[in-house]
Length: 158
Image 1 (cartoon, one colour):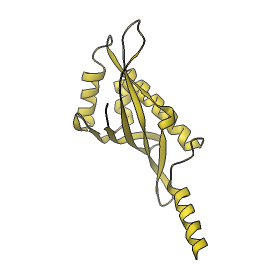
Image 2 (cartoon, one colour):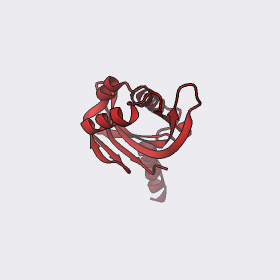
Image 3 (cartoon, helix red, strand yellow):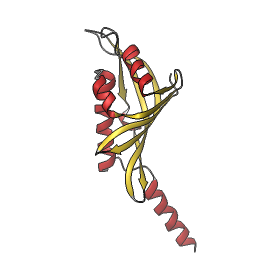
Image 4 (cartoon, one colour):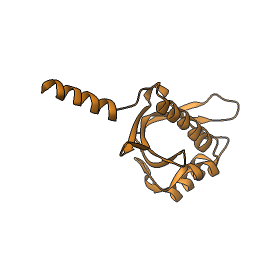
């Protein structure tokens, strides 16, 4: 009986834990994170950001409260994309990323991605200046073969 319990524990841990950092799913989400934030946050591609966020997006921020998609896009334009001479930049700490698959009856429908990111200010002809760090938790849903951001927790800003 004890061996069965140990095997069951190992199976549950393996089946529902974080995916390996060299797995296809992890690498796909790592790449997606890189593209999503480079285009949406760093380059201010609002059309891309609009397309890649769920219509019912909920963004929980420890300093600016709860935002729906409309408020999130407004705040992005206002606070992140209004001054190209003093531009906030986001860079993920690659070693901090973790990906947890979400299944419905054995079918992958989404992931939870957690990590730490650092923020900088970019000014013309200067090196990026570090301004802070925060933790994040993202819920991405797989819709029409694309990872769409549905829920965000952005917290522990320092």
